[in-house]
Image (tube, rainbow, N blue to C red):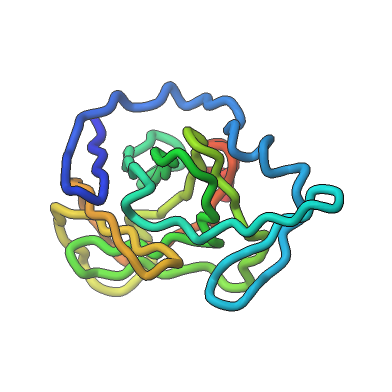
Length: 180
C-alpha cells in the first residue's frame, strides 16, 4: 500500500499501480498550448490569438502519492494530481526530502512547464538507495515534496534511503518517470 496526502494533512491509502499507466489527461490538454515564461513564476499559454496565464501549482491544489516500485530496483514513484478546478503549472521538478534528508536532483533539467488540467497527473522517479554512495543510509517515515511555488506536501512513507536522488523531472507517464 502507498500513502497519499493533500496539503490539508488528510491521509488516505492508495493501491500500488500495476506498473502500466496510461498517459495523463493533463499532458494531452496542455499539448496544444505553447508556454511562455512570465515574471513571478507564472506561465502564459497562447491558443491562437487568446492568451491565458497559468499559475504555478500550490500544495492546496494537489494530492501527492508515493509508491515504492519493483523496477527499477530501490525506486519510488511520486504522483502529483491536480485536485482543484483550475489548471496549474507543476514546474520542472518536485524537490524531495525524506525526514529532512534532501534527495539530489539531476543536472541539465529542461522541458517545463508541466500544465496540469483539473484531475490531471504527472509523475517523478526517485532512486532511494544508491549503493555506490558513501555512508550507510537510514530508515525514514515522511516524504516531503517541495513545489516550485515554495509550498510543500508531506506524505507518510516508511522507507530506507541512502543518498536518495530524483531521477527525472515531472513526466506525463509513470513509465517515463521510471525510465532513467
